[in-house]
Image (cartoon, rainbow, N blue to C red; front, side, top):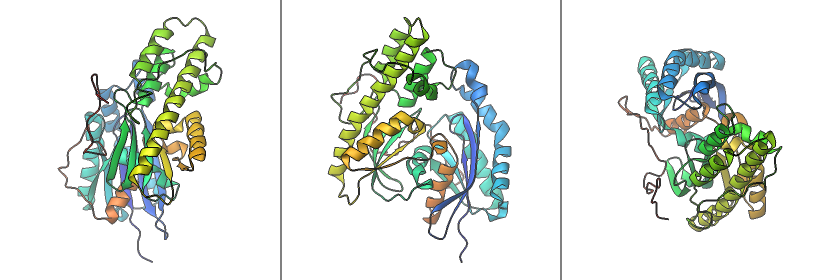
Length: 357
């Protein structure tokens, strides 16, 4: 029986310091041996959002211990590691630099290959950690920094079908929570408050709902919440606004996903239609349920990562590292951090005022 690759993954693109060790079984399926995540919620709570300099300092203080714990929990020895994979982008450059530098130094110290990983590719492949997934598939990536539909053809082969032209969905959730007086990170709490409210109380806008193909926009929705939040007087008003926001997001995603389905089917000859949803917002149970029902209506198989792997983590980084290791796709130790690193590098940059759809 041949030795299976053992990959150390490191993630520090924003406010989670994470490390993971992954290998694979005889069937070639990934096996997570350890997955350590240290959150910085307490560091940033008083500021209502992530402060890059504080995040980077916290990464530097913790990363040595986090990597050591990941190795210890895996019950493997350092000399058994075959390669080190670190997130190189996209993200906050001061944060990326910590994990990237540590990963390079670690790979150099043990004289093993270094692999630079696109954080978004980690999310894109994360459902492989608990599902058998074959290419091609349609991906909806919804997180605090990104919202886009992608035609996933294979490792490193992505074609963007639609993207947000302004704010990411996760950011809209977090900003709405802040306006409702919920402590950072408040996005996940919106879903809880929404259960107590009337989703039809407020008629919120759906920007570019009837144009722009499967592109998305959430800035106008966020502005409407800001305006209404100034007149909130009771807890019930707060619950109603949370419910209306959640419902509006679901209506936007329902329509835009149907458009993405049609575009995906035009571009591929499909034996099986597979729809993958990944990123932090994929943990929203209402959105999961709505998209699962839509897939049933349209004869798609729906695939989601485990709830605990929707947010930033190093298991998904190690997974991409494992895939690249098997293809001998290694990187030099001078590989730079990339604050902006789209999966589809040929797609037009669509963000900001004046975007023509």
